[in-house]
Image (cartoon, rainbow, N blue to C red; front, side, top):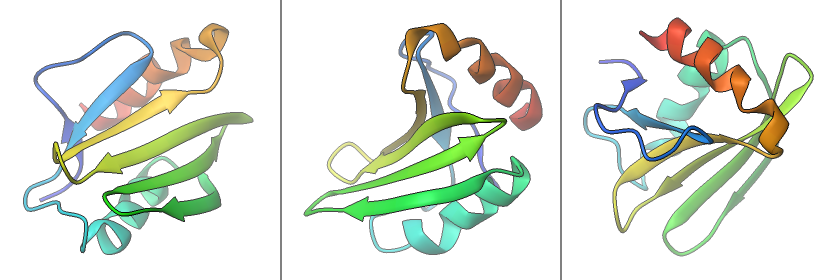
Length: 95
């Protein structure tokens, strides 16, 4: 299975994602596939007790790629409101 768009989308500033079997332990092995599909560059990785947070560069725009174990949710978000249009482009790639 690969990364897909979640059926439910929270807002237009966030792109909710799904991957079968995704959990805190396997995020670091599954996430690079999305980075590759988007032809993005991984800039930074952070993690804590129940969350992974990566910073990606996609077409000169910084994206936050996050996973929260408690809710088992993964999403991409833009850092600035005026960049949210790039999420529609990414949604087309993943559709």
